[in-house]
Image (cartoon, rainbow, N blue to C red; front, side, top):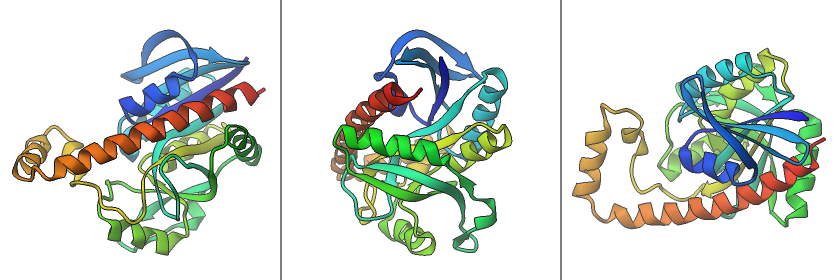
Length: 250
């Protein structure tokens, strides 16, 4: 069977992907939750890395050291950096890290996605009627929650999608010579602010500040509910895509 590793950042993303497979066991790899099962001719491990490049890099290195994989997929949700709708599928041609201090990327450090996997993902997405955008992905080290920040990255890179983990995952896959793909559904759009600065919730130390911000601005609850609805829509589309993509993988 083809051995597929799918790397997600959060519990919600991991659940969306896991719904596409027949779950056989739950384990921990590199100290993080991993769901193991199968779909079609694939043996699938769905890893939850946690948010950000540091966690993603550490978990993927541990995973690839302990599991022999035939391909690695960075999946979950993404911010669209081009005109899109919630739930559209973004397929990466390559992925780079955003250098905030110079407002640019280092193209020489870009990690290409396997061409044959891009083609397979595009075909699978079209089979289930998903709108697809293909192009560069950019990974950042912090949540970009202001529309103007997203627009700055879009203008400086020409990328179609933004996340926090794919560049780190791709670098480890390249190092280990494992074919790599980025395939994520859109959960937030280029021209919309997130309801608050979610960076406050990335570490236990800043959680109280985040809760205090929410308590002081009850109006942001409406934005949080909107983002939840968008994420739920993105999750449904992601599950549908993963089901067909794994069925088509031989």
